Amino acid sequence: MGRHRRNARAILCAMSMPADAGAIDVSALAPAGTEADVVARLFWLMAGGALAVWLAVLAVALFALLRPGPRDRRSGRALIVAGGVVAPTLVLGALLLHGLVLMPRLRAPPPGEAPSGAGPRIIVTGEQWWWRVRYAGFEGIGDVVLANEIHLPVGERVRLVLDSPDVIHALWIPSLAGKIDMIPGRTTTLVLEPTRAGTFRGVCAEYCGTSHAHMRFLAVVKGRADFERWLRAQAAPAAAPRTALQRQGRDAFLRNGCGACHAVRGTPAGGTVGPDLTHVGSRLEIAAGALPNDAEALQRWIARPHATKPEALMPDFEMLPPTEIRAIAAWLGGLK
Image (cartoon, rainbow, N blue to C red; front, side):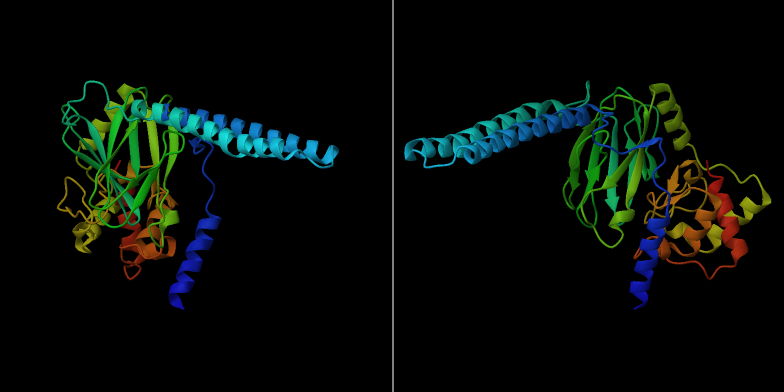
């Protein structure tokens, strides 16, 4: 019974959350990437074909209604063969051929990439229920790890390497590309080429457990100079606390064992079970899109994560004094 109550509270919480801000695009029919543009055009082509077929069937039905009476058996058989076999085969075959011709170009690697696949890449791991993101191979910058946000340079092809350690997930950024499965024990690849700057919603498109609906992320597309500046900032260690409250929060974070699951570079915290929190204060959302990134939401998440995300692996910390929870939230919010 208690578990059902927690699930009900999580559903009510999700229903009460504000909708995506207008600045966040989520429509597959408002493409901002090369693949999404192809998918949108293919959709409209198929919709137009479906409309033409529907109008043809409607015309035949009206003809039959307006001219009742017996029909010649031979002409009826010819109509069935032409309309029920030949026409669908030609239409579906043409659509299949058109789709197959488009695929190789969409999956082509970024220009200048070595045949071995070495080079700049973004490794995205789908976990229950969040996204681990690692930037690897970018010149002059070591591996950069963050969570639930993917930043991309506009107008450039970037390779995403996808995997999962637990169950099947599916990464889908409707405005940028089609969805692709993330299968345990197998690595898949998605090549993205954003065509305009902006912030775009991504989701898990494969049911993966209780909090599947709370497994979202953001793709942030920006100019090359802004992207490089952001990446170098992410590679830096965590900023030192600036206030007494933040120092208390850092000490409480370490004292209560949070560093066993979370890493904060520049501190003794080096856990790899949960998201890297080195620059969590700079992220647009927390808890894989389940909550906004503000002080109140951070305190709610620290105290009772299961009220927002049922069966999340993070334990509740509501046993801590409210002053400690507030201090930890203040320190995390300052990690820009």
